[in-house]
Image: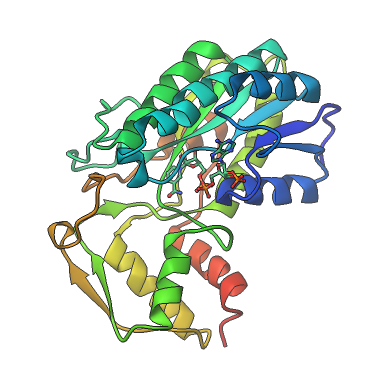
Length: 301
Ligand SMILES: NC(=O)c1ccc[n+]([C@@H]2O[C@H](COP(=O)([O-])OP(=O)(O)OC[C@H]3O[C@@H](n4cnc5c(N)ncnc54)[C@H](OP(=O)(O)O)[C@@H]3O)[C@@H](O)[C@H]2O)c1
C-alpha cells in the first residue's frame, strides 16, 4: 500500500502499459489520475500542461505514445507530435509540478548491428521513423525534467490492446499454418511486469532525497531473448496446453515479409543497470507468457 498523499498521473487509457499500470497501481491503493483522449491529447501540449498541473501529481508516468511502427513511416509529423513534442510537454509539466517523470522508450532506438545485449550507453541509430521519434522524445524528456527515468522496453504484449500474442492466437484460429520471421532477435516483455517495475520505482523517485543515479535511462525487459518465430512457437505451445488454438509455425526471413518500417535484426536489452541501481529484475519472458495466456485462453490443464 502507498503512503503517497498526491496522485500518480498516467497518460493513456486503453494502451497495454497504461491499462496494466492503472490496474496495478489502483489495486495497490494508489490514487491514479488518468490523462487520456479525448480530454488530454498528447499532441495538444497546452492541454497536457493544464491537466498535469491540475492533477498535482507525486509522479507522472508517460505510457502514451504513437506506436504504429509501419504507419509512422507515412505520418512522421503525427508520430513526432506525440513521441517527441508530446513527451517533452509531459516531462516539462511534471517538472513544473515538482514531480519526476517515468517515460517509456523502445529498443528500436538501436540499429541492431551489435552482437551482445544492448546497454544504455551504446550508440543509438534508429532505422525507422518510429524509432527516431522515440529517440527524440528521450532527448527532450531528458532536457525538460532532470528527474526523469526513461525505461527502454521491447516487444510489449499483454492480455489488453493489440499485440503479437493476440495476433498469433487470432490467426491460429483461422489458418492451417503461420509463417513468422526468424531472423529478428529481441526480448518479449509483458505490460504487467513493466507496471510492476513502475510500482517499485515510484517510492524511490517520489522522495526529495533520491540520489542522482536513480534517474536516467534504464533498459526494462523480461529476461531472455528469442526471435519472433521462437516467440510464436512458444505462444502456440502455451495455447495448446490450455486447449486453445494452435497451428505449426514456419520460419521465414525478414526479406520474405516486406513491411514499411525497417526493424533491428538484434535488439536484446541488457537490464543490468536497472538491477544494479534499483534492485529491480524482471522474470524470464516464458512464465510471463504463461500468465498472459492464463488470462487470454484459460489455465493450463
Ligand atoms: N508495443 C510495443 O511493442 C512497444 C515496444 C517498445 C516500446 N514500447 C513503448 O512502450 C510504451 C507503451 O506502449 P504500449 O504497447 O502500451 O502502447 P499501445 O498499446 O499502442 O497504447 C498506446 C497508448 O498511447 C495513447 N495515445 C496514442 N496517441 C495519443 C495521443 N495523441 N494522445 C494521448 N494518448 C495517445 C493511446 O491512447 P488511448 O488510450 O486513447 O487508446 C494508448 O493508451 C510506449 O512508449 C511505446 O513506445 C512499446
